[in-house]
Length: 415
Image (tube, rainbow, N blue to C red; front, side, top):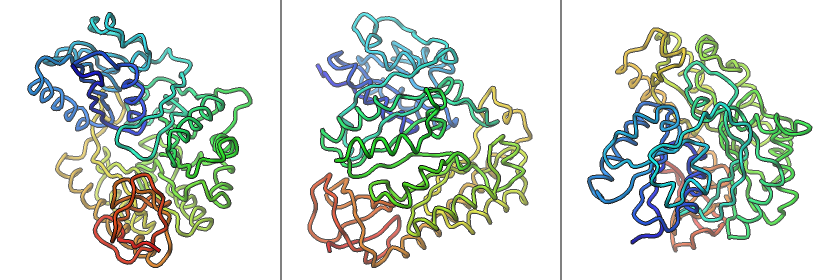
């Protein structure tokens, strides 16, 4: 009988972190499979359902526990699937008492996530198969973008206090991790509910000052209009703060951004990119983009395509718009699904061309690369790097010289 549960994780980095919390809580429960779902798109939910059916088919004696955002929003959709013995809400899944043998016998535990007012810190020091670690600093979202169902799966914005974040980072460094990624649902809202209303950049400063042995600190997705001055100063002057930004951009058309109820316009995003590059010319910049948002005609799509081509962002995460029941966008005039997919493919091609140019700009410039396998890793700018020559130790940070560009990244040699 296995003592470590099998966990199938879908979606964001926050889900990855939460899966490790659950892995700790669920030790010793025997033949249990945990499915941590995502609700961002219909495709994410389809993949989770498919994984549940496959898991039950391959291991019919396993007890399957379904949790995550999709389970929080529509628990009844998951409890009826074959092999599912328990559905847990997003609050319940992080509580140790939810994983006792007695609790496991209860089929449903999903509370009203909108009533949540705090988020507990959890100490995780083992990220299975990973060389960088994630730390949750914030949970939930108070904004209501018209396409997004996630606030109803995550609840209102809640911040993890500075001391708890520092304690987690210190423990991770003690466990051998050399890079930590701070993550959350709406991370730039961190601190708004804490005494004194500190901002995210202040948290980063505290972490770097109080854990001097931490070698690399990275941020996950940030809102373009909420990047505070401390973050800009760290990007400019702190070598341990990675030269990397991932922007929650979504579109490159002002009209579509307004219909999405985003808080930025195209000019704001362009200003952020320009300022970042003025401070760190080699910075790696990514963005989330939705293709085929309702009402997007050919002209509006071309605005987004042209903007992304002009910006040359190397790391685009593009996905076709997916209706989410209960959101305002689901009631807007839809773009046909085949057109959404075609537009997404077009934007991915723009991203691939931008990435190739960006990787070429790094040729001949020494890079510090965190090795994630004996032959592959990521630079400080998050450029994928393949090591040419003798293999390296996993978790080692090497000084490498990029000598060629290949599909999907750089080829580099030891200096």
